[in-house]
Length: 167
Image (cartoon, rainbow, N blue to C red; front, side, top):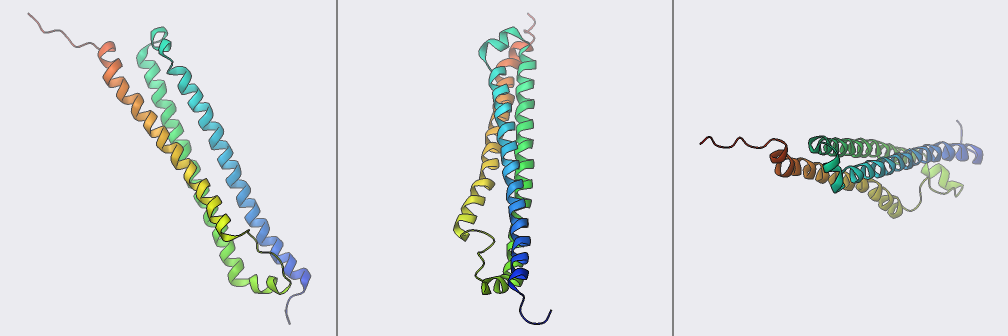
């Protein structure tokens, strides 16, 4: 290429990089939506199973085992979501760095906007997205611990009474 790129070439470069950022942001949005829906369904199921009358109607061991399993699945959903969001954020940051290192001076000649909004907004938005799966993961871990502890403290003595001492 001889000489500086034309406006059309600068716009094409900008579109390519902006398209990559938009695609990764859409993936993050979809992953967050899926996690929120999955967590809502799992917590609703957990709440219905944990109702006090369920232990009377069903086997208490089965109820607490199901509650523990739902909490464990919810914890896995949070971990997977967090890892996939982290990968998407890393990709966005690599695209931004590549654009700034190689093409921002070319595109700024024609006064094209940046491929992201203000850096502070970019950081804040990704901080919230990165923190939410961790918060749900902590809640799921707490419900898992609650299910296991309540089983051993409340249900286990009822389901498996100790053998009375022989007189």
